[in-house]
Length: 162
Image (cartoon, rainbow, N blue to C red; front, side, top):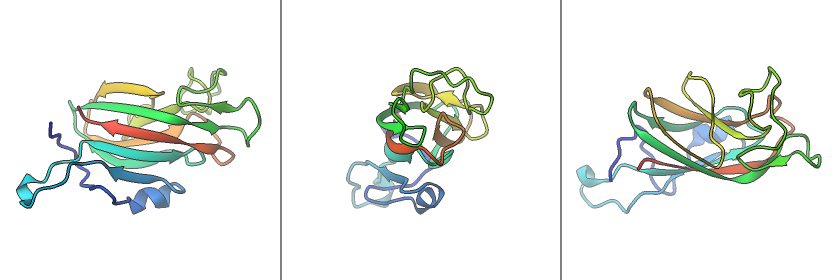
């Protein structure tokens, strides 16, 4: 099913803006092979994004439209405290809850994958999230930690528009 996504990104291309904003952040689209006619070229409906844990609030450069259904799936492991043992977690976060006022999203685990749509409040993504966009805008991602510089690891994120 074709989806209207404002980003015009095609397979095997990398977003230089995302690389500039986050070390080694990459954004590629997985799309069917386009046909010979430009008007028949499909709109990308799946995007892969690698989020380094050391990068705070990375713009994925993926634009969604109000009313559009978005599915996010994530995997990987990050460490939120300079490689110290017990500070590793998957996209659902560590067992310790981030309750500090400095956390981008209180009440979920340290190191959890969180996102936001433009200037809206952050939301928990975890390993899987399905939502309907309430406004047009670009998706941003980070780990739930207020000090990103000492973080390590990567979350691999797949964003689809069913």
